[in-house]
Amino acid sequence: MADGTTTVSAPALRGFAPPARRSSLRRFAQRRSTVAVLMCLPLICLIAGLVVYPFFYSIWLSLLNRAMTRFIALFNYRYLLRSDTFQLVIFQSCFFAITAVFFKALIGFILAHVMHNISGKDQKLWRGVLLVPWVIPPALSTLGWWWMISGDYSAINWLLEQVGMHPVAWLASTWWARIWVVAVNVWYGTPFFMIMYLATLKSVPDQLYEAAAIDGATWLQKIRYISLPMLRNIISITVLFSLIVTFANFDIVENLTAGAPANTTHVFATYAFQLGIQSGNIPLGAAVSLFIFPILAIFSIFILRGVGRRAQEGI
Amino acid sequence: MSGNVATAGALAPRRRRRSSIKNERRWALCGSYIALVVFAIGFLIPPYFELVTSLKTSQEIGSGKSPWFVHHLYLGNFIEIIRNPQFQTFFLNTVKVTVFVVIVTLVIAILAAYSLARMRFFGSTAFATGVFLTYLVPESLLFIPLFKVLSFLHLINSTWCLALIWPTLSVPFCTWIMIGYFSSIPKELDEAAMIDGASHLQMLWKIFIPVAMPGIIAATIFAFTVCWGDFLYPLAYLFTAKQMVLTSGIVSNLIHGDVLDWGHIMAANILASLPPVLIYAFLMDYYIAGLTAGATKG
Figure 1 (cartoon, rainbow over the protein chains, first blue to last red):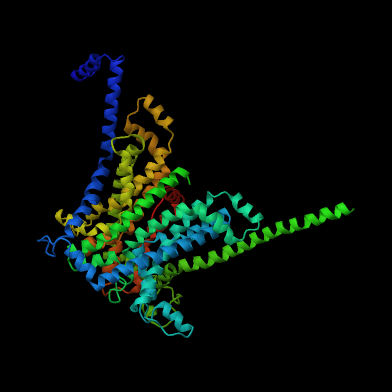
Figure 2 (cartoon, rainbow over the protein chains, first blue to last red):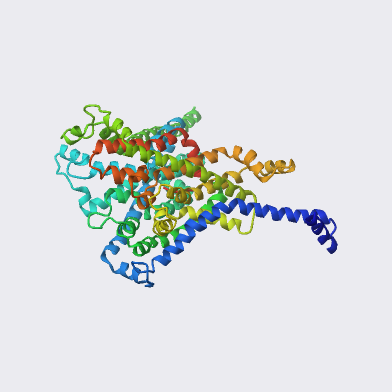
């Protein structure tokens, strides 16, 4: 009652024409935004408590000494950047992410075109088959890979022996191990690129390709002058996205090599896990995993731009 | 006469060109199928190899016979692993927490998406962008500070710590998908409901959720697979077999225990990968629609 009288009287005093209506509208707007915030509240709490706070906490942790009793400023970072192992980790993380994403995008691009050539019903079947690597949890499928390539009596070595070659200790030699880690990641991630590109290819008008065919364009020219320009935006989004995810990869590297031989296949995530969780040096581990952040920050800005453009174009 | 010859002469190359386009198309189709078969074989080798290994006795795995074929079909690995109490615990833990997280995710994501898509509040656009950015944050960036947070909450080495943390992986993307689906619902629909005096919750329950069902299914599948396959968090926070989930349990417990051989591990592996694979087999279209609608990860 009291509430009603004040809201009616306040605008009436100021002499507005339809007083009651305006105030109830204002109250409605107020109530509406309060309800809106309330509905978002669980999400806000989740992001604030378990993403934003841990991130800043991580920065703080990385500035402490091993026992977390003393503030030692950037000493952990200086120590890391000077250690030979960590220089290897930086190199391997970049090598791993760049080669893996390049091949994922390339094979995904080829597969999308190949799939686009065949008719609807077959396409669905083949898409299902080719999606299998991406559907199995990578931590588990990597175990299968490990069993297939590790040791002298592995299945791959058995095949080599059948053709009369010597068995190779794949995961014990640095470069073979690096190549296999990339290969397993490519195997796992390619289907994602394929479906993203295939979905975009479907929105490219067929007339473009027909016109090009009538003008006598080769397949290479069709890709260069039609597919690439039409897919440019989605290619940049997926590549940037995958660079972030691959850069931060843990499952595949941990299960295939766990950094062996001699720490040469460690990436940031596995090295941070080894230092922070397994050896219990939480500040140093936090410092290692924070090296992922610059890449995340830079690439996500570009992704946001690409997503915005994609929404505008409606592709 | 001469005119006729001239037209025939002009027609011939055109016809030839048309047939060459047709030919080219046929070759492209042939080449496509060959490429598909090659890639499909390459993609399916590891799962095939897991299956072959899981169907052998340990003697046969140890013998020098070809590892690529099953010589004597043996189902014992599957039967023993299903009866294995540790494996049962892992499976049950995974199901429990995953189902819980999927439900929590849907509730949080649908409420937030409705609010962000339809009701504006101060900073709501910026917040929607923030939600998308959160989705880009990889788990390996935050697992160390979260370890400290969880030990402060006394949740280290408890399966339920995952119920607290997994939503950070699933909610942002699900919210993002749902914002997209909700925004595509015509405004006239909720205006009509509002005139009839529906409250926001009624509108959400009676209009938005039924209309955006495909989006909800896509979000459910995403949340389920992300939780089911997550490896880093359970590996970092769970230490005893009683608390573990499938991914971390199979890797750290079944392999290091000496009772089990590779036949058993591969059988466990296949059983653990089966639920997501089955879900995709039946609901792939929904998922791909949701995925390609919202620019995603892989």
